[in-house]
Image (cartoon, rainbow, N blue to C red; front, side, top):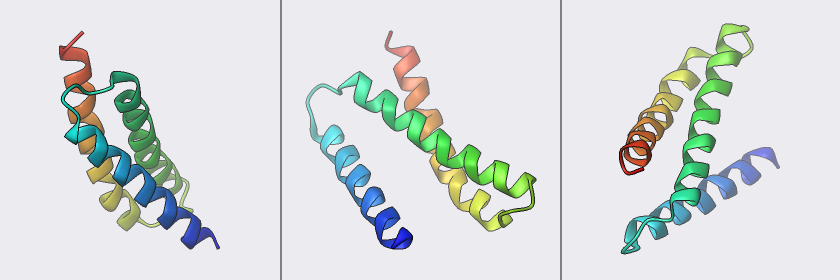
Length: 80
């Protein structure tokens, strides 16, 4: 059940990010929530790995979330 729920949430946020990308003007609060969510995924994976409760592969996979969150955050801060 957890895998199904996680897959669903990934799909929902993926559609939300696609919808944001198609808008003529980006909704900054929604994008900021995306930054928080993606950074959270990375730091949870990193914390579990550091506590030896998760594999390093999860950190490698989550580094894509960190990269995308960093790009979005830089864009949000630059456009203030």
